[in-house]
Image 1: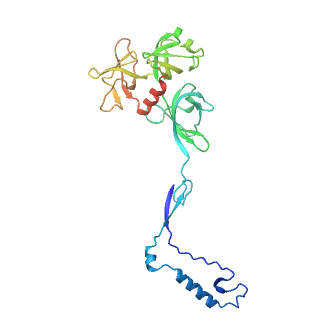
Image 2: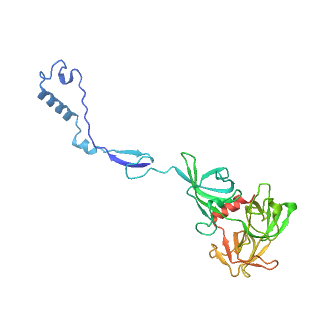
Length: 310
């Protein structure tokens, strides 16, 4: 509430005329009354009741507080918005209407971003059921309407399948075991049969939830043409600053020539949630020399760690 103060220093005199005020009867007409005498009597009465100079000096001027509700405006300040900022993380369960974690969003002004800074080279139409996204936007307290401002989407692993385990409905990509379920969405040309159409050597992009064992429960598997960018996210389980190597899942990562992003002076630590990427796939036995190691931001880590370990 905005408050402003007005000093009240106005003296107000109220006179109530009774039928015999000052001895003058209302039965007389205005022409019968000696108005000069009436005015003299009134001035005399005011002087008798007026405070003495000493009393007047002791009289305090009392301030009056007037509260202005935040929704009102005195012409200078705009009304306070009733929208609140929100962040929702989870799986897309519907495209029309666009729904994440049972929350429907208005996407009319949304911008899509990936782990690369700035707008992504993908469209809203590229989003599919099963994609894991983080949405930043607003919720109207008046209408309960959710509006998305930014949609952050990023695959957990992009690479070539090296092994299929049909009995356990899983496959391996970049050393990470990816488990599928009946609700996993398989997309891309050539996957009408789901897991049964996957084969070693295919290049896939997988989104999903990391498991406590270091694997991935896939919500979406997208078959792509052989790419030149390979990346995988995970928790660092071992690190050697001297040899500049670390362990991520079943992979040994050589980051000797890699660009370290967002680590600052502290370096890479066990327990860090990171993403490694390279333009070449990992060799079968040697350490994988990567081009970049990125520390997921505090916001990403909060959501990835707290919400993805399922």
